[in-house]
Image (cartoon, rainbow, N blue to C red; front, top):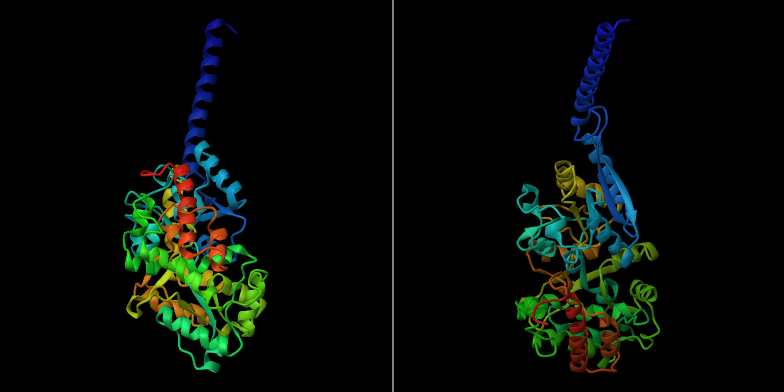
Length: 440
């Protein structure tokens, strides 16, 4: 073959190869652009990082229905809970290795993740109009809203045995004094008026923490002033009152005699059996009660921690963990579609068909089924009338690590209410400085 012919053949071969490459590239491009990065025959995929402590039955029910309605697959990855899981989230966000959707606590623990830098602002999405303002506040930074509620809420207050109330002719108290009068009647009847389970020291905090609605009713700016070091618990009468209520229950002898040696599970049994009439508790305990005493769950009611004035009663709410969209996700539109479905009536119905709620949802206009626990029905009027406030930890990043030890001291008469408040003011100071908050 002469030189000219060889050049012509080589040229034709190169042209053919180039054309094949171009055609292959076009074909590949056509396949990948349909469906947001996957072949047209495949579903678009969302990845979702959730801690391994979260009950997945309700979430999986939502995912199954969502996948059937949309050509979008949702794949769950799990991480450990606690500080180990927090560090995994921070590392994955920092390295750009985060999933499309992220499950994380609302309130102060969200702020530690720099939400403006890492999560999609949802404040202008139409589906966010139905989210309760209290919840939005718990997932906001600088006027931007970043998450939807992943579960129903819980509330802090007083679980009570309805049969004991009926037997003794008692009415649900509207003031703290009325509650103390009920306790006296219960004590005189030979029953435990207030169940104390300080063997599990975290339970000693509830009377203090559940009072936050009442604190804010008296001192509306307390959470902001507290965060900015402009207000102290010991010198704010409304906040000090929370410690005083804890101390009063002990002073008047309303706790079971062995409250320092009694644990949470034993306390639930006392409430279910009616040997104890009241249990200051967060309502996630209803799920435990339904498991351990299913035949008694209908006997358990709930009321908020009363204030000193009947016209100021309301509910202190523990805001649920949220679902957030990674700002660097390549599937933001699909992720928004998932969030919208998740908080729809259909989504909530699917969730609650698998997991009975232990509190109302933080979404307006959603109806819960008629077979919810009676204690949850007791909470609904407060949500419907807007008489709710988040627990302080959802309004302020300042929460001292030693609170449960301090409330145990106050709740067992070792420290006075004022001394306990002063101790806690010192405790939060250390934490506020570690967080680098202004004013500390």
